[in-house]
Length: 78
Length: 196
Image (cartoon, rainbow over all chains, first blue to last red; front, top):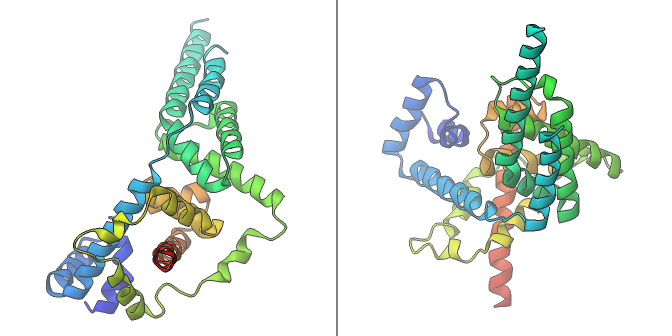
């Protein structure tokens, strides 16, 4: 597998979306020998984990939460 | 008589499951609604409407299906309906805004070297508001797959179901969206460095 082929599938690989065992093994074999592609994978993993972590730092305001739960309670008793 | 009782019991059980599902996913639905609408009042409306529609369509709720995915599909459909009504410009018009993710690939990843910092200094420069603003700047076309995959952790298959889009389209929008997001993040660094 070439760098080009590997990079074409890099996001799917990082996202755990490559289901074909052979393709996955080919990518992993390539990554063992190619520092550049390995760096790309590590970089993408770090950015994704960073973005997720920061984007999830969102506290729902207490009044919004109370109003939403109030609606749910109405359904509970419906 | 017994049949009616069984039916009522099943209905009640389903209702309890949907209630639990809504409660558990309230924070995720709210933060997603906020990234979609950019403001707290619209986000709250969107979440409340999602709950209402979830209960109204409880007959369609299939317990074997991913419950969180079902709620997010309702949320997304609601958002798209509202968005399309509000916007004069069609949703799809945004597609041409970016060049292909794989063009200039070498350049892209060389640019990434600015991200790679053994001391993690690069990442420390961002506050969560920078990241949230960068996500909100993405056109809807790319923002939804990025939010659903990268923040809410849905698989490509689930995102395709939620957005009613072929899986290949989800993948290409996701890749383009991620690329755009990285550019926006780099812009924040460049801007703050120029200022400081």
